[in-house]
Length: 371
Ligand code: GMT
Image (cartoon, rainbow, N blue to C red; front, top):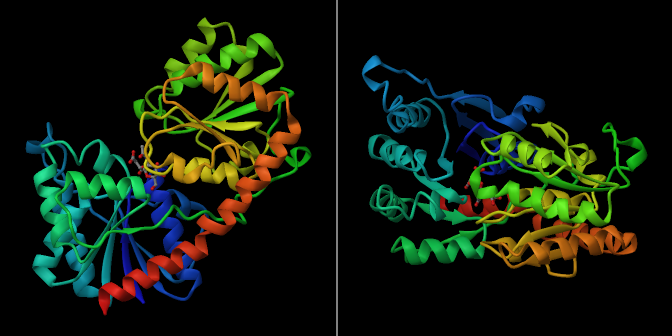
């Protein structure tokens, strides 16, 4: 097959999922044209002859200084060019805003079919807003295929977009070779504390990261030799740093910035913590589970589809700090439980989220669309 896959190049989940899919397809012998405005994060450390990188030209103009370059048009032109110049049979757009609209335009120009995978905030934050909803509803109904990443998201789309056609659910693909437990002794990462909790995010307000720092401070009161390792970069990172300082736990909290290799960090955790206000799936939860580290996350969005409560982690009521700290303390004091839940988590990832298997599901979907 020859597929054009469009995504954001940043460390965000939709870009990672799209690039992982491109990698799996390339390994299976398919040709992928990966389209973005910069080299996607995973492609910086991976090369494959079956993957061609297609860059959207960002042509700006002084008149656009307040609104930014009209990316929808620029991407549409690129998609139309790819449709004309290459033998790509289908365009697959990851994250509906704004390139879903570009693909719709490219089809108007070239007749190339397109499919969209909605990932999260393109639906539950932007998509439901009247500023985006009418255009997205139209585009979804005109698309040749629409998929999303959890049953929660499927319901959201059906309810909020007047969408009654077929809607597939494909969970996030996890590279189970890359994400596997690494012996703490072999970690390229110096562990300062006896027990560690991990948080991995882009520190956007939706991740609610300061809540994690507050809950962690409660745990430190009882177990001073506990660390919190915060990975990633984003708007609320500094707020977390200041909060850690004000709560007198700066020594316990380390900020690692964006990391290419995080399996060693997941591997040294008693648990990965999430406090998100919404999460369509929760890619980092599944990555952590793949490394045999249990997860503690709120009962929002698609998270209950990823975590089986008390099996491979804990799900707490959103905003309930007492409940979060209770589960953290339980794991700090029970290493056997960490191990048991970790094994169950890995099992779930291997059976439900393994990247090659998820890629096969996408490929079947492409075949159905093109049939
Ligand atoms: O939707 C977003 O906020 C951004 C998106 C991204 O591009 O980073 O993340 C979403 O897509 C991931 C991959 O499908 C999911 O694992 C994340 O749960 C989801 N984020 C949210 O729903 C907040």
